[in-house]
Image 1: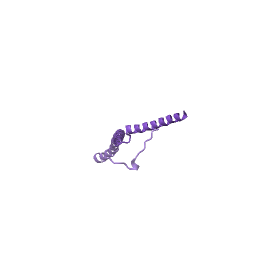
Image 2: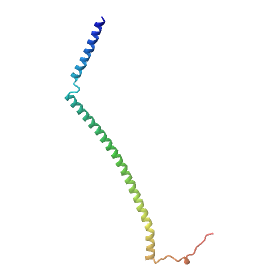
Image 3: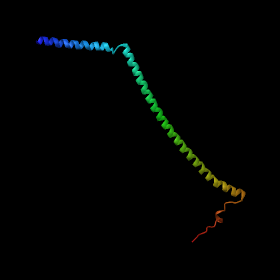
Image 4: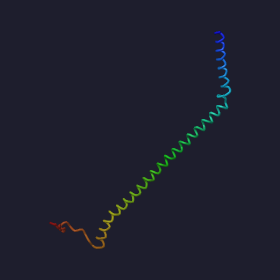
Length: 119
């Protein structure tokens, strides 16, 4: 009886091994056709990932461009304010020049200056 059970177990394991080899042959995992399909699948996956990366990089650079444009606008405003300030400071020298040239005014000597005190 035991010998018969061993034969059955050996036959069952032999059948399983045979079935596994036939499944591998049937699925043909390593056939040239299947390898080509896997390579093409890998190419599609790499292509998809590159599209995702390119989109991310594009959005990142667009955000950076917007920040640089905002900074440029702020610097242009600051430059305009500095130009106004420069023209204000040059206005005093222009008034002094006109007073000397057109009205014949001159800066008095220190001895001619009189200090007035308010008590």
